[in-house]
Image 1 (cartoon, rainbow, N blue to C red):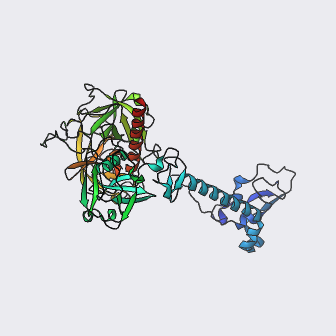
Image 2 (cartoon, rainbow, N blue to C red):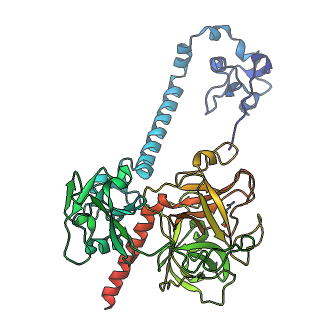
Image 3 (cartoon, rainbow, N blue to C red):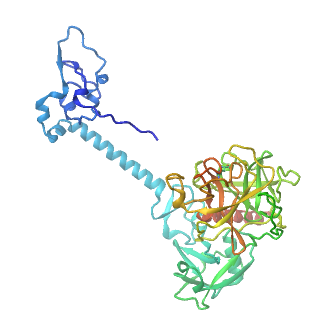
Length: 504
Ligand code: ARG
């Protein structure tokens, strides 16, 4: 930050200046023509006009009459009231006040329109905002239709189905639920798959999910948009249950049998969702498999390298370079609309050209649900081929470590990362140092096991140094970017379906 030192200067400190009786008035104001100006300034050194170097360079000719003046000791001027002095400067005052008002207004309007969208819905990264009431109303108001995306979500520990209309999220009762609705919901969540619908008693789910209950008028087959169905609001679910949904088998390690292994080297199948992202054959970052088509990573890994052709994804390996197995080709790279090359919104998605086959050594990790909270102190796993010391080479073998989640409160302490941790980040590690992710681990998983299902809580993003005391690892908080992830997956899955239709 740039700071200016204010030096206190008293009248005695100021030199006696030689000033001609008549002066050419400089364009920036009046110097000796108005000695009152100098007298009116507080004697704290900010009196620009009394500083000798400000004397206009037009030096008086030797023939000019010279009078010695001491600008601060004009008694008449000292006796003038603040108001009189202000009056002497009314023009300057008026100009500067107007300038300040104009600048503040234009900045305010600019920021308001461009950045805040207060109370409204912003169309993707664009500056267009629409009324919140128009979100998920069945009609596209945004250019790219973002207002009709992310209209379904899974919430809470039990993956409760919620639909949105007019910016309001409602929990769906199991009452008239059908597999058609389940399949449609999964499609809207960006999956090509559907596993099962189930139900949970209303009183067993998180209280905030119980407030607004609705049932959906069930279609008889076909893919629909849930938020466009007839929504019947209910004070209670007739069945006493709400709909829960599973779109993909994820978060399992079918090939892993836990056994104590040397150090923190990982065993095949221990992190089946871990991939190595390689640019022109070189390991750059980690990533996590979330569906057969999608890899989640950090935006800074692909920012400026967004040509899919240069990238290869290696799945189901523990040793680098892994070139024994074929690299999976990348079809598309998208990073968060709000990522600006800094620390915030450090998340990206890679779409694979051909879908992955899950076989035990390659498996997807579950995305967390909306509203899920992870208590600080929860032990989670980080993994990757990153450097084993700050500035070191990447590791040949996949390594992993257990780290506790750190609350944002603790992570923003003055000696940790004051003012640097946003709502979209989560810290994990040890304040005493020693265990951490490092360069080359970025984009990889921060995975937490939650009743024997593994969930992706974070993506490795940044840290100062590696494993230093009070400088834990910082991870992109996945729950904060869920709607962006869903939105991207839904759009691309829709594009694919359209392509398939036109191709047939
Ligand atoms: N930005 C690094 C990367 O690109 C990850 C750094 C993580 N640092 C840490 N101290 N946890 O790989």
